[in-house]
Length: 562
Ligand code: GLY
Image 1 (cartoon, rainbow, N blue to C red):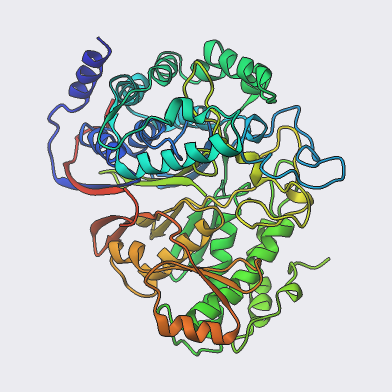
Image 2: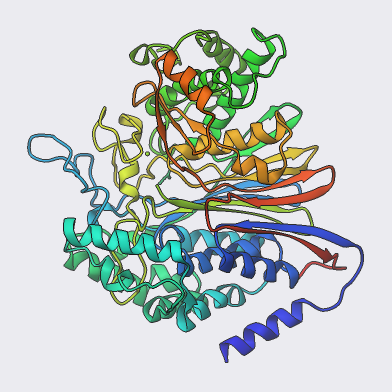
């Protein structure tokens, strides 16, 4: 019955309203979300409709990161305006600054990473509800239904998911036997159908009651009871109080483009703009307009020197702006960035402890990019933090909870799972959002979409995103090359460490070692980008992942969808 209704609604909105063919594109982290997002666009939905449908599908088919038990950030470019939706998790009301410390004041290993205490109050369902109310054009129920169907009828498990789930199940069985991950995901087998009846029932409540299907009633009661019985903190009051927030995105002009990106509580937008602008200061100053060769030792070192300053600022100044003022304008001020770029040492590595915050006086996540036939765009990054989050499934509700509390600073000077440091600005407080690196970003060229980009990867998200932008703008790469060409990451600490993807030139690695860098190979990120090259859309998913991207040629409807 539900499916019949869904098909009917789609037929209704796909009435033949033919004019000029127009391009649309999706770059998605898996084949199921790509198929559903493309169908929504083909049937007359806009980019936000496609994003909402995809987000719920990913909660079924990408359990390591897709979610309804986590949060994220969505950047929307619609009808010429840009808006940033913050649906980040918040600390429960009973959380407190020292909740991850033992009686000696030391951080208890894994407490913020695995188990019920690791979870913040989820924001995803509120986020999707808010963005749909503001910008959706198709009925909510029709957009949630594909996820309900996939959970109810099952999907064929891809091999990488089966392998990752098995490895994680083996890990928790040995190290955290109280965690119930394996009861739900231990039996995943490659090529076999996987059904999730509890999750299907939860998604059906969301389909029928909107956000109230999650934050109130049966689902809220299941979460709160499970938390109470298993030492967690999230209550029905926490769920009822949760609100996604619309914020002004951070933006700046760069090379004739308008960069629009994630605002605090993400560190990503500020970091990307700082990185690109300091790079340009050096390129146009000391280097007299010469671009260093792509991925040469000179290029890697220059960007690592910039990264040291970016991450020193991140650790000191960034946190939830509702709790701690974040000096956004000062961190992006031209004079400030000019002064910071003069500190860079182009000949040798700046001593790490000497790089301090510059103003006077927190791996697994997923991203998708969508452009619709009207030129609207969604850049959406969503997460339950590490792969499979806290490893805890809400019994009776069938979904994994996040371990986002680890993105807070458990104690000044003690790195989180991503090696990120933080202080007072990012300490745990009830109702506060934990600092993020998620960086959904859009580049505009005279108001039209030039590029939509984003990636998972904890602190390496920032790197993946700013390097994808440089790959396209500075090095004129096509979309596929821009996501597949090897990237490198430096974040001040660990001292002088450069993480690089496989395929990094052996001669360059030798040069960097000779300069004193410690090199570590790491396949971080899963970029999903859409690029407009000379009026033609290109879409690309990083080849190392299981993403699927498509460019669609669609008729331009005479009127917007329902
Ligand atoms: N959980 C990763 C991030 O938000 O940066």
